[in-house]
Image 1 (cartoon, one colour):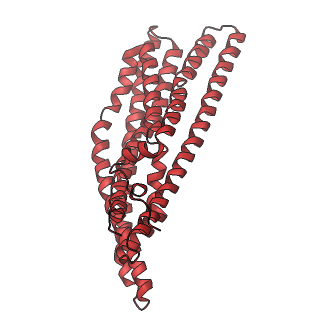
Image 2 (cartoon, one colour):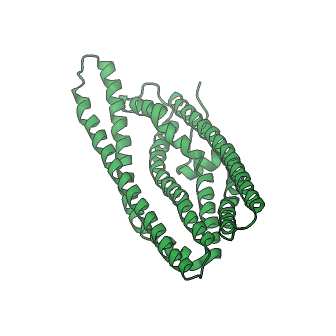
Image 3 (cartoon, rainbow, N blue to C red):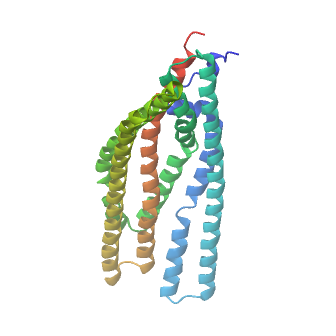
Amino acid sequence: MAVPERDTLLPRRIAGYVVAYSGRHQLGLAALSVAVFALAALPLEFQRRLVNTLVERGSFVTVIWFAAGYAAVALGEQVLKLLLNVYRGWVAEDSVRNLRHVVSAAAERADRAGSTEEIGAQISMMLEEAEPIGGFTGISLSEPLLQSGILASLIGYMAMLDWRLALLGLAFFLPQTVFVPLLQAGINRRARERILVKRSISAGVVDNVVARAAGWAWAYEPIGRVFTLNMGIYRLKFTLNLLMNMMHHLGVASALCLGGWQVLQGRMEIGTVVAIVGGLGKLNDPWGDLVNWAREFAVVGVKYRLFSEFVNGLSRRPT
């Protein structure tokens, strides 16, 4: 039975698909993300006050209250993250299932006697390509909102304590605005070519199974090409991670040096230095996650365009 065209046509962009298929769930994920990043800076404040109480030899009861407050906030944050991650997982898996249904429905609507290239592409899309696209749906809005919110909370808190020390540490994030896009562009090009090569391998497998007499020597070259592309992606990705981590540690070292000097001069409390250095340490994870999200958004965008073009081509074919 033919499937109605509206059930198989996909939006041209990944953002359009996210809104069309999971828009209401994105609102729920966004609300949980806001709740998580609202608590991001509170543990640092509890640490700062606890350290200052110890240095000033304050009451142990006060120390207990600060420690209990820290534990309560940390527990609440982790529970919210658990709920967020489970919800994300459900949205992602539901989206993967939907994409696989869309591919099968479009194939059913189109001419059943498709070419081996089309059949190979359908196999690749059903088994592999739907997974990362659907998986991205779960984090498409909540991840940048969460990580940007955490960054804003931490930066605002550190600036409130000592804007000069915070600015010095943050200055080492600026070079990343240059080398991250350059390296990511190289990753994107290789990811797109890898998708096309894998589709050709799937088509070759189908063609070989149909012919039965054909050998498998044809597969050596494309398999080798996939290996080369994957190694290129690994080199670029891990070089990017190295540069980002190096910038982070240079920022922490600079903040420790300047903060330590101000403590020795009697111009700053030890707790403030601890809080700012701790804040810089906590910045690395959301910044890295935000860069990873941008990397995945770019790669998945390429995958989705190829995916939607193929599905929509099948859906528009006359029955």
